[in-house]
Image (cartoon, rainbow, N blue to C red; front, side, top):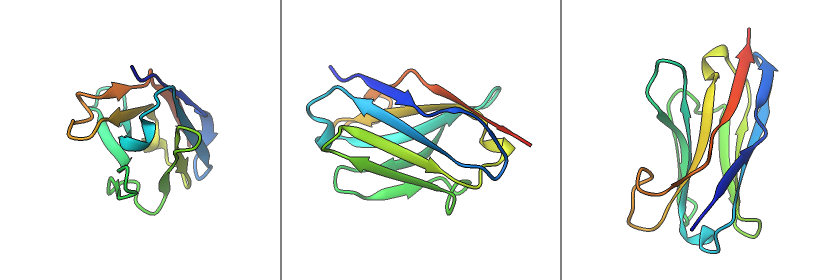
Length: 119
């Protein structure tokens, strides 16, 4: 069983920065694809960024150039560096891990962490 715990959220002013971390208890962390999702009130959950076990990265168009996803397999941790934050980035952010061949929906999820960007 894999547990994911997010940290680093909070309240920040627009154009500020935050770094989210997600630590895993699982020993197969290095074999899994990892992602950061977010859900704002009244909106559907969306994929913000993902990184495969081979290091291939994708970003949502809305965060390209501002957010950076990275992983440290020695620490079983995935990060999301968020720069130039905007009020529309306000949401609950979730990290997720998917074993090889599975989707994120079928994988493991953190409990979520609030990010609030004030204007």
